[in-house]
Image (cartoon, rainbow, N blue to C red; front, side, top):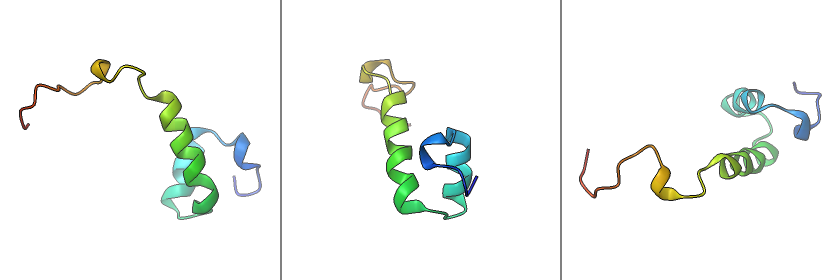
Length: 55
């Protein structure tokens, strides 16, 4: 994984490298971009209740 281009890494490979503190300046922006793209467009459709009460 350490010799592959960053753009070719799968999300699980990114996660493994991030937990090993490898290449964080390059990997974290890519990971954030992947998470933003995977986030629901409508916050009301999230998995967590938003009734204002504490869990």
